[in-house]
Length: 414
Image 1 (cartoon, rainbow, N blue to C red):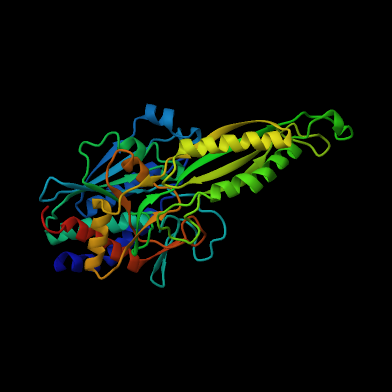
Image 2 (image 1 turned 90 degrees about the vertical axis):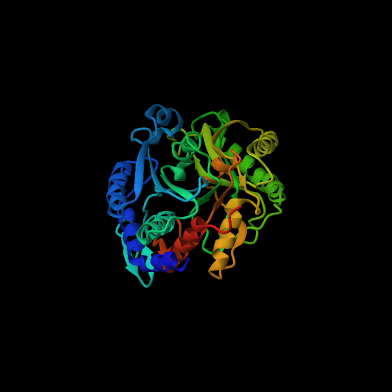
């Protein structure tokens, strides 16, 4: 399919322009204050290239019931871009347009003022993951401008809220699809030499250790919650963390050591009410972030954690309670499934050997695999998501767009 691939190559500047326009809108979740502005900007861009699209509003009652509380004040929008194909088989792309806050420490540019320098596009969301969205659109535009109809019909869904769990984005979408796709590609920043065929799950817990306040001059009249919490935490570090680390996955990951399940204690530590230096603390909490291998599930991880919390409290002589802040099931797609094989075969036509691995973080992938839909993640990437001076290589953008074009063109009929 040389003509379409050539067209993708010639669209490099347009892909960069599309990405830059996306970055300019600070679509920070959970608030979503700029989601409407992003939709308006995308309407202009999609219209410019003659792409068919529709805007889907997530029902407000669903948002109010399922989004995190701080996210309920603004509407949630899903943008569907459709490229007709020769067959009735559908390949979906799904990518989130929300980003984390810009944050401090930027030296190349401000987070939402994109800069093109030394073959890179800098800006918040450039690699996670507006770059992936721009690559998909580059492939769509290439077919459109070349006047070629791909084998597969394709839908690109630009969704909100992935950075806060995705319930009001992909979570809602998968329950309201008109037609199930043959496969789904999520252009998260795997890098063009890896395809993620799964991801770890997560269980976030807040442990609240109870004490009894008293004047600091008479500490024996109180119960120091900080002391109890500290003793619990130390015991968990010495016993719970090694037990979790002993759970080893059989799959391949991007970094050595990532095959182990993990538990990180103390991401947030504090008091529910304001304390004073001369007051025995009556309540102290700490958090636990448990990452769950694909061979596990949230229920088994929760059961293990409950058992170790009970033992830790017993050893510390502590009274406590806990609450689940967030949970996410792991996801896994067979390396023989269409969503993985299509990526590997398409990249192979470009001379790129792609290795299937499991993502260490969490993705919207799980919403599809939980419904038995073949899904993988493949897109332009590097190790700068969420960091200052986040960037994406322009060469990666173009390579990913070529792979997506080859996927849509398809091979021999099944």
